[in-house]
Length: 86
Image (tube, rainbow, N blue to C red; front, side):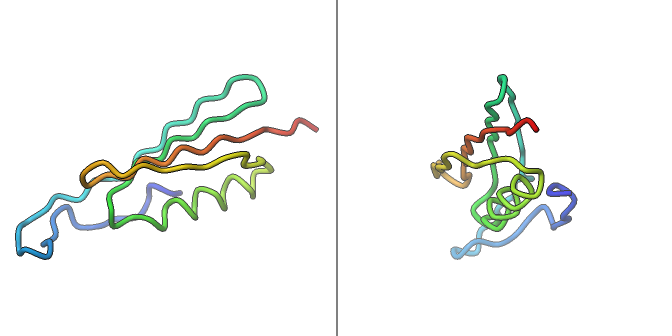
């Protein structure tokens, strides 16, 4: 669902240069009851972080910690979660 948003592959930056847009990438790793979600987006896709948190909460996952790092034109979000087994 999060990756289903279509956008053009090229846009213009403030300097008038063509810049390719990066498709969002999600990596999920589960280790027992711990879950790590890594979300990599472009600078123009910050809403994806909020949508990811929303989906995790809907699935009953507790977010323990979340952080991000901007490197050039990419944003790396790291979300650490706890899965509750009922």
